[in-house]
Image: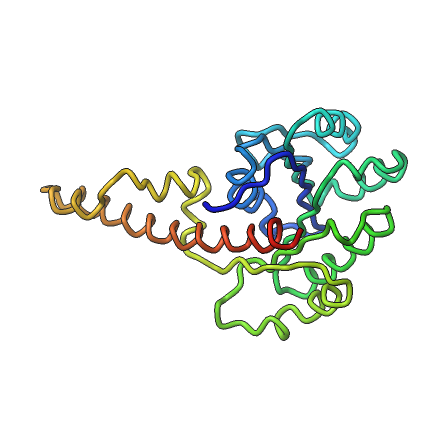
Length: 234
C-alpha cells in the first residue's frame, strides 16, 4: 500500500445496487484512510462490523461526519433518494465530503443510474471536481469504450476521473477477511506446504497460498486505483 488519504471524507453511492459499493468502501478506501469506521446508510446492514442507519437519519450522520477527522459513508441504493431529499433541505451540507465515489458495472441499467446520480449530485451543488467513478468487475480484455460507453462519454465530457477494478476470483475470499489478512505476508506458505504431512492440511495450505496470490493482485490493482483517483487527480 503506497498511498494514504488522511483527513478526508468520502461518500460511496449509486442508484443501483450490486455495483460493489461496500466492497470498495471496505477494501479500497478504509485501509488507505487510517482504518476509519464506515457508516452504512442502508435498510439492512451488510457491512457487518460498521454502523448502519436509515436514510431518514441523515442529519445525525452528518453531525458525525463533520465531527470526524476521516469518514466513509456508504449510501445504499434503497436510501439514496431519501438522503438526497434530506440534503436538499440542508443547504450545502454535502460540502462536508471531499469526494463522492460512484462505482458502476457495465450493465445498461447500472450505467444509466450512474449518469443519473452524477447529474443529481451536480444539481445539489456538488462540484464535479469531487466526483470519482470506478468501473468495477471489469474483464482485462474488455474494451471500455464499448462496455462503458454510456458512462464514459459523460465522464469524458465533464472530465471526471475514473479507474478500473478488474474482476478477480480473490474477491470471494474477502467477505470475512481483509486483503492484508488474506496475503499474510508473515507466513511462508510454500514452506508450510512442504512441512505438512497430512494431505488435507497440505491442501489447506495450498489453498491459502493461492488466496494470498489472488489478494496480492487485488491489492496492486486497488493501490493503482486509489493513486489515480485520490492522489494524482487532486
